[in-house]
Length: 70
Image 1 (cartoon, rainbow, N blue to C red):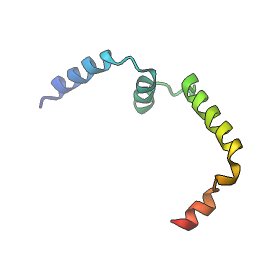
Image 2 (image 1 turned 90 degrees about the horizontal axis):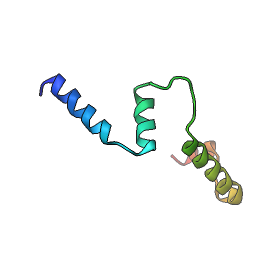
Image 3 (image 1 turned 90 degrees about the vertical axis):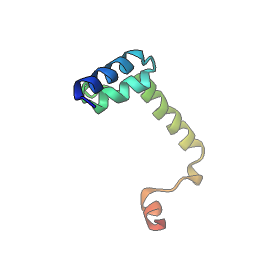
Image 4 (image 1 turned 45 degrees about the vertical axis):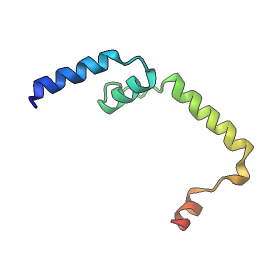
């Protein structure tokens, strides 16, 4: 397949994307946002996981313990 044709197909598909997470991931992949900003949805996910971690600390394993099990 011709590279120009493939690039144009990709561009058309990218124009259809409405999911913020997908657009964010593509931007990161292409390094379009090197300013280091973290999107709000990502901050929310981290906050949610941190809260869950706090509630179930006894069920969590630290990295060293996981490595030993590998």
